[in-house]
Image (tube, rainbow, N blue to C red):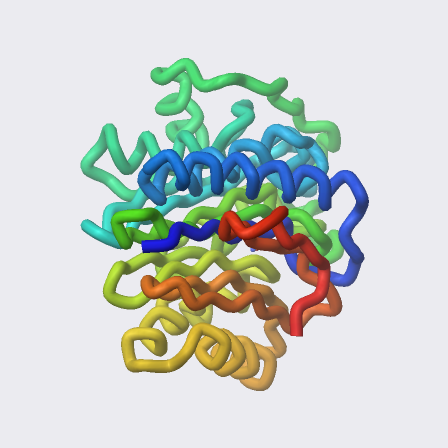
Length: 291
Ligand code: ASP
């Protein structure tokens, strides 16, 4: 099986920056190098996302945006397609790598999703690398926050990856600081299995980015996988579901779709999506538009 890694740095209105291109390319190289050495897809997805979380140039990990009260709360999830194992964290604070916390939920507990201060406490047990916890800056009541503008849209930055390893297993992951102007406690699609990510060796692997409220309501990642199982090609499945997201609920998103036979698609209904892939033939390909 020819291994392959795809990664993204978010879909939105803004073009990719030079630094984002460099980090995405570096992350794909790290991921592909691991695949070549026989690493499982799960490890590859985690390590690729860790490079992006650490970069500080994406809306994840060190670069994650703040919620309306000035606090950085992050979401992440990871899933592998052989045993359909998955782990996720939501509203976690104070760590550099939420994707690793998600993997630990999968491997060290009988659960799939841990949230809030207890997810943060869980991560502390494993001595994950810490980042400074941002203190609430605006001492506004929740009522006052509610009167502020509701979430408007997405800017670049959530990160994600999908991989196919030598043994034919796929995996998917994503990590985010959420969307602009979100209420404290808001959780998007990224930590929700079947919405922001899905992976099944009988279907494929999907990692989503975009406005989570729409992606959740249409359980987008699972629907794309179901279409793959039904025989649709990755590109057709991605287009179908993204178009439905737009026409039914005016959603906005981008997706990485990888089939277990190595066919893949990168698709978006936003002006830009920072994404790329590496299959070992030459340098990683990284662009901010895919048609
Ligand atoms: N999907 C993420 C969220 O809604 C944001 C993004 O992908 O840009 O939290």
